[in-house]
Length: 320
Image (tube, rainbow, N blue to C red; front, side, top):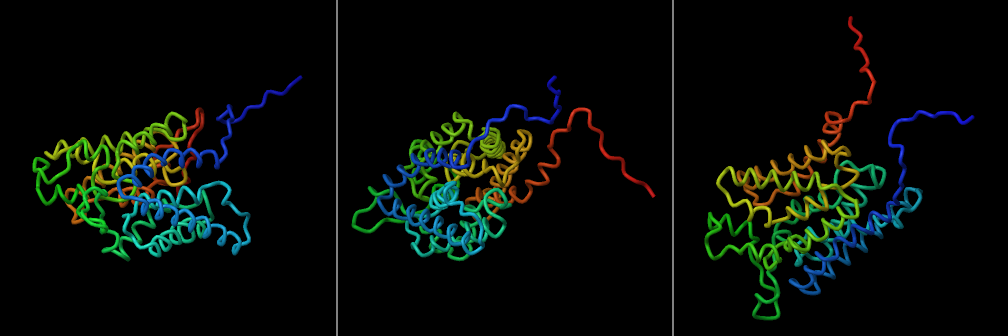
């Protein structure tokens, strides 16, 4: 007679390889990369290639030096490099991009044990390190190709900076909703085209690679707070790195909560911090900082939102 084995959930085991997940993320980012190449030229592709190759090389070398099994086959280094490139201005010198890759892979990822062990998103941390170290290069935004009247690229302010200069989105200097949605604005390589990022995010959701709990709560909380305070909520969710952060960085498996309740709390926290930085800070964008801060709080969110096992009793505290 077969024994009845009682074990905790989940009972339906459906293992998905890390490489499969990462491959889907790469596929989801292709529309944004293609949009970046279309608007900013082949320099965008070169920057992405340098970030990807350097991330893979650093991961391979680091694992060899640490005498650990090599993990470049899981494609996580490729994803890190691609997401890092999406967060960089196209004009960034390539050697700075290599430094960013070193920070992301060696310092943030491998020194903490590798994939799944890092407490913060490698690409976001690398972007912030580059921003602090090379502020001029990291804020040298290039406009789409058709804005130039010579062989040199034309630089300009991002939509969020333009809104701050005008004080309102009613001025003609500020891009229209359609420009923001399609990516016809200045900014980082992969954050300008909301349409491409939305397509990629919905693809990941349809493939059940990500849950929409964090992205929806992130975008929704930022929208609501901006609307309540008299701002233009549509403009603020389309401008900057909201879609890139919400769909591709606030859904990272290793640095965000596992439970649905935790994901919602994480997303709301990201939206609130982004709003506060944009509204009251001297820096017009706040997505990267908000996600990094919420990464640090993830263990506490997990603890507060964890599901209680049915029938389990909490351990009694010893007194005296």
